[in-house]
Length: 177
Image 1 (cartoon, rainbow, N blue to C red):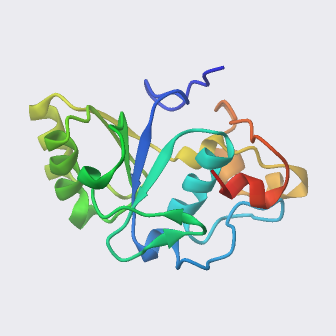
Image 2: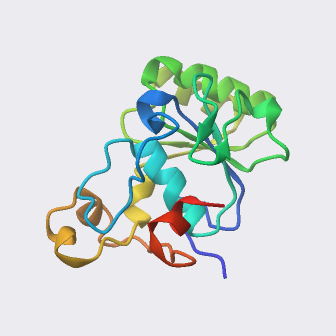
């Protein structure tokens, strides 16, 4: 079953998520999405965990990190084992234009900007190249349970968002592929 996500995106698409140790944490960083999490420290890693836990194909890209948990990170879109449909940018605004240029060169038509990651140069470039741009926070698709939901910004951001079903049980399962 395909789940509708932000904009024209859905769970049947293949994703790449651009980040670095600032957005993913180090290789041994603890799991970010637990029942007690109010706001993840590393939002890029949390989005990655959410998608992997929901069974969505997603590839992490980071030039300063070899792995996220047990999963290999790639250095660029050209290293990926298959073509992706969407690039999620978690890098700072200063890297936004480079990300969208690389995506355009790779034939990727959808760019998703997490909060505070887009720049006017990047969005203008996307417009001139005919790339679809969506902005928001993918964590709005995270189902926050228990008392945590009353204080979690992810819960309030995603009140109307479809929640992704996590396949398997437990925190370890949610971060594995």
